[in-house]
Image 1 (cartoon, rainbow, N blue to C red):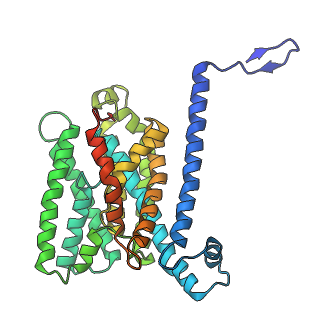
Image 2 (image 1 turned 120 degrees about the horizontal axis):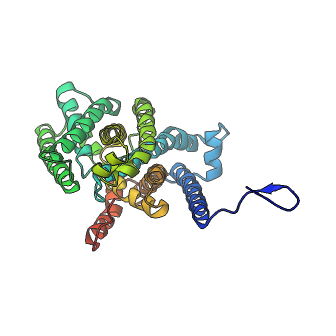
Image 3 (image 1 turned 45 degrees about the horizontal axis):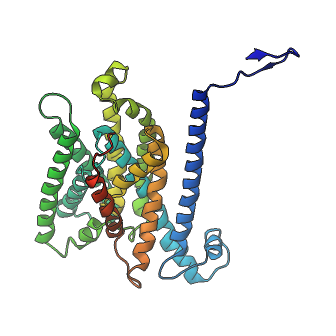
Length: 355
């Protein structure tokens, strides 16, 4: 504060650094609000577009209990509403878990699929079907969570074997190896009884088609808790990105941060895989877009990933409905088709951006 001639006080002018911080914060908030608006548009498109197109005003009337044709009401409320909610939650879970995995491993190519998390969840679901006779998607949840937890801990344990902490390339190789082994075992189990495992084959492709409230109900609290932990752990991840030694020197608990990150990854990736099956590339692409939009601060990267990933997944699901009309293709195929060129571009870059 400084005193002017009339005796009143006014705030001292802020320095260039403070103005730059305010501009950055304003830009980030603006981009986040714009992304939320795009997400709302994606939700409307998910409710309106399909084999039976429904105008947005009819969609609103159907959601609010207005008088609409029975076919439109059934299409919007009974079929597309749970599918849209599942797309929102699964997309956010995949985006958040991908951001956390890339931060913890300091590897820009890491995602739940590449690190074996999705394969672990799928393996345990196959065991649930083969041994315990689980047939409903609602029953996949706990098996998928257990598999995701075992795979995540296993990859970090294998990658940390030997002296020192886990290096990014060790974690990546451990995840790829574990995914290959588990994929082979799953194929063997499925081929042993193709008719019995027909549902598993559809689930493995990644789809929102079988979304229902029964499967979604138990998963909602798990995904919400995982998202909260992911947002909270964002600040410590900024310190962890400097390396374990520097993070410890700055007073950050490396072990506690990694433990919280593993819990968030397990809840988010495991819950998403349980509901919709393994959906590739969402957790890989979106954190890069979020980092480009928000900068290197993981507090913003995680939040932005939670918002942008559902946009990608819902948009891919809309494409999956209409590209093979009157049928549809699994949404996992569409995300893979979109994500493969992105992965190739990342690999071909002269120098991958360090996290």
